[in-house]
Image (cartoon, rainbow, N blue to C red; front, side):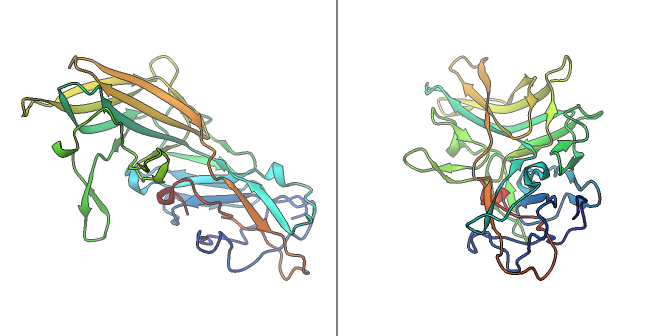
Length: 310
């Protein structure tokens, strides 16, 4: 308001796809020179999020150690929404940016006579487990620096049921799901016959951007697995890989593991892509006289991942 940031006036509003991401109570743009920041997070939970307002609105984000309970965080940069004018179609298009980096693991086998079961997959490194994002700029306070202590994140390998509170229960990957030449996606994402996403999973590591490319800073991915020959299962094997990757804000990463007939060799590679699916939202710009001054905090686009979307 008048070039200064004010307190949240649209705070913690739940938006759903059923309602076309439209909030029940409208807010109004009252001054073309006002600056607005927009924050969205998913799923609809404030666990791990603490919003502060004032001259420098920011959000303190804490990474949940359980991947299935992590929150995706998006923001619309205030610098893109200065000196706004009322559009002809009464809508304002907001371009949301992913504040985090995203990582998942896929595994497959070469299709030889041997079978492989992945028992456990986890990554360890000096990840930032808590940081502050400045909403006006989209900058993290730690700016990608590695943390002082290690954190460990385990990729759940198979959901086998629900507990008393309806939370998923995970166990090691079963023999009936042994690796084949078709990649197993440990995010839990499923695909249709054309190879398109049918349903997004909730087993992504949503990490605060961290640069592990410096000497001695590499994160380490560990895979525990068994092999089968003539229906006999081996003892558990362990393979560990350095992941000297700069995990950049707004990028999606996939670690690909390929098990070969040579039991001592697992091919390993990291793919990276822009993570920009479905991050544009349109907000209605009311033509009537405003009844109250305000801006929405979580103006929410349709999330890429329903399990990671508000």
